[in-house]
Length: 149
Image (cartoon, rainbow, N blue to C red; front, side, top):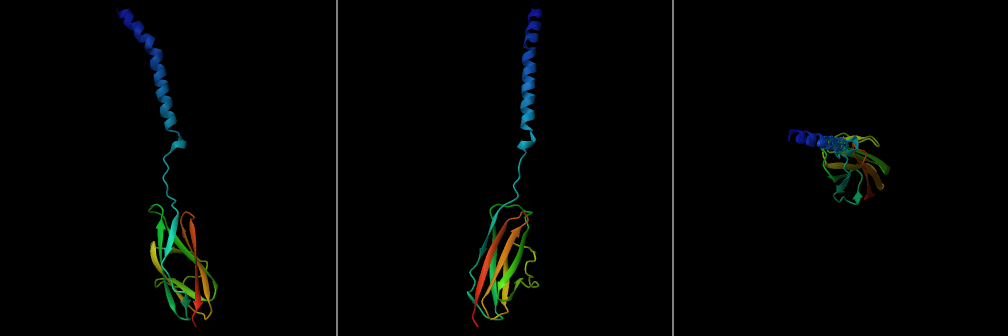
């Protein structure tokens, strides 16, 4: 009987080898670099703006309330602001910070903030504000004020 068991074990040896090769192949394929876990960190966003007055007079300051609404949450996302005034003249600032210079990029410390626009002209005024994030997503907002002088 011992000869029977020896031949029985030897008969299954190719099956064990085949099974080991199959398991190794599956393990190697599942560890492929193409199947790496992807962590999404680039989330588009929208900017909500509270209503602002239509008219502004020379020297008057208008408050512009904004909120950045993310489509996802990645804690290391940074937001930036820049603006360009193409009609009239005025000053745009973040809270009590120094006035923004046109086309310069400034960091936004929070996702809910207020800008203050002070008119320095007696004609209608228009300017664009761009909010961007550290991944290249950008939103353009246009503001227009009629002169009330």
